[in-house]
Image (cartoon, rainbow, N blue to C red; front, side, top):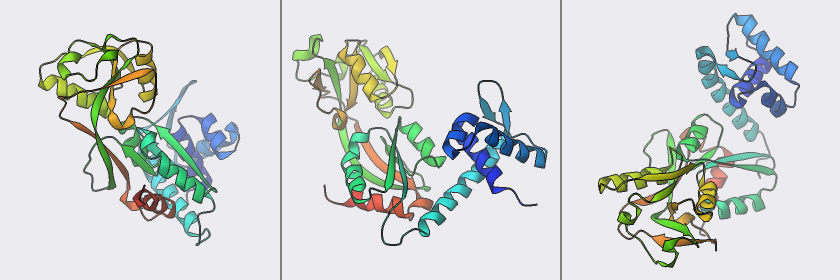
Length: 289
């Protein structure tokens, strides 16, 4: 017997959103309508796809397996839609980028938006693990990640590498210095990114290799939160030199004996590299700055 496309679409939306309410908003339907479609799908095959409680829904093992299939199904549907669009230009559609640091691709995103104003561009920020997770679950078209990677499933476009630097608030005792050594960070209160951050992992490896102590003052999610924590004097931050940006509230200090460099790579799934919207963005990335 055939599987209802509407029921699969409702299931997929709930599975990705993690909520019947958010799935209904995404599909511009009512929550009862979404719930009814999923219930009919489960009843038709006498299966349970979600474990439900009052606050959340979670996929069962069978639901996880079905999600892997619907992810491929709806990516193929999107590809078919793009193929049938105007062959001369990208007039409608969307492009989602999962990035660890938007600064590395903002000029290219601006160029893309100027040339293709009909395309909705969405930027989702997170650490490298988050960005790869979104890419492999088909929630993003491209990912910008902060480390080198080898994976035959991925098309990898190297962008740049940069040294690691520390930064402190203007009121910090180090504000008058021009540089530091890794030893200066030994047992010093540090503003650390969340687990999964390549910057944090690199710093920990460099410190541990020299027998130096990591002393977390606070752990925060994302670079902006790290910057604000440093500005108010919670501790010393560490970041890629390419991501420091201009901020009069902080002083940047090169770590002169840090050997490791932080890399940035733009990646997409090889199976999606010929999609027009993905291929077009990759072409823009290849253009001279």
